[in-house]
Image 1 (tube, rainbow, N blue to C red):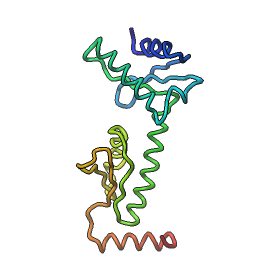
Image 2 (image 1 turned 30 degrees about the vertical axis):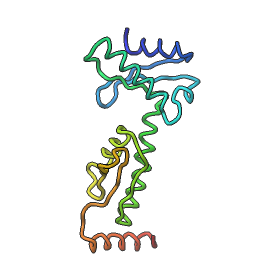
Image 3 (image 1 turned 90 degrees about the vertical axis):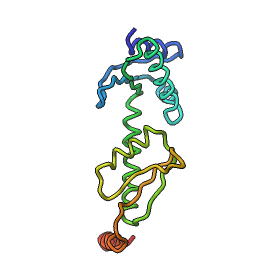
Image 4 (image 1 turned 45 degrees about the horizontal axis):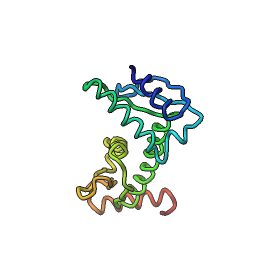
Length: 165
């Protein structure tokens, strides 16, 4: 049974009428895109139902074949839209860090979301992201290690350009 057929069977048992499209993601993994009139119910609160379905599908596939590649389950592009929202929000917060020179702590996130944040800023010289060792679910955005007078010069320059903070 293919991953698409297995997912269709699972969702059928749960009472969903769906159409499933197979796609390749950037990482080379198979993505199964679900289309249904009950997308909100299938996605669940904060994507929890979708995550559970993906987890279960991958466990079933790996039970048959230990080397089965991971399958990503998405519903009407929910995951990509959520990633875009996370990156957009964090970029706004990073801009505040650039202006003020003060670190910000983000709300608790799962490891996938923290990875999205890290990848969004890994090549950015103006901010750094890290997770404190005492709380692995927290992500911090900090300015790079620069002398205080240089940082205050940037803040003053930005303040004069924007008409004040």
